[in-house]
Image (tube, rainbow, N blue to C red; front, side, top):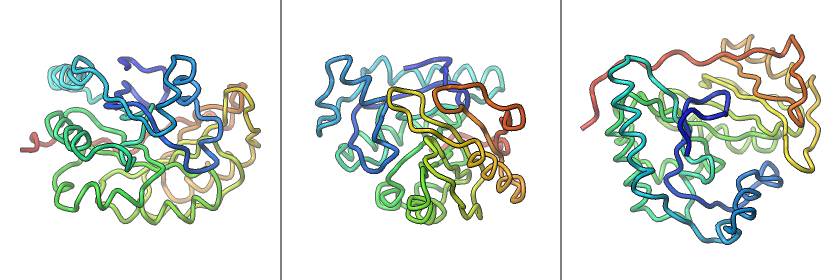
Length: 245
């Protein structure tokens, strides 16, 4: 779970636990819920949460050691099958994750949430001091979530802040002040809702105007990406720093 991820914008994925609850239209065709149903875990989207194995939790430590040796920082997408800031997850599990992040400063941890309003309570201000290797993002699939979620993200102390506009369900006009990176993409699974290419172009142009890195992940149903939209940028590199105590 999963070294050398197939997700284009990350290096590895790590799931400290599995399970979530739908909270907005982006969740309607959740790939993780579909995976859970296929593997007999439907209860994980009905309130149950399952912590992953101790062996899985050791993987980031191995990746960190390799990164220290090579000098190349991998990006780790944390909780592709869950949400770090899910309030149905025990605080003890989340604290264990925070400790793991502190112990692996050579990894850039990408925490993507649909619950940015809970970050301040679950990660107090003092925990962010010196933590340059956490990239905090939120999903904004429509203008309603642009207005609701981005202010909560902007209020955090994360050094790198990003938006995942995937699935992009309508044209949006986000305030990109304080945002470092935008990921854009359409749905790919059964019942995928169409993303108009011009919605992505508008977002690309907004990013260019504001100096924000833009990453076009995929079109609806993984159709070919138009040449003018094949932009895959990343935010500024994380500076090197000593391990957090």
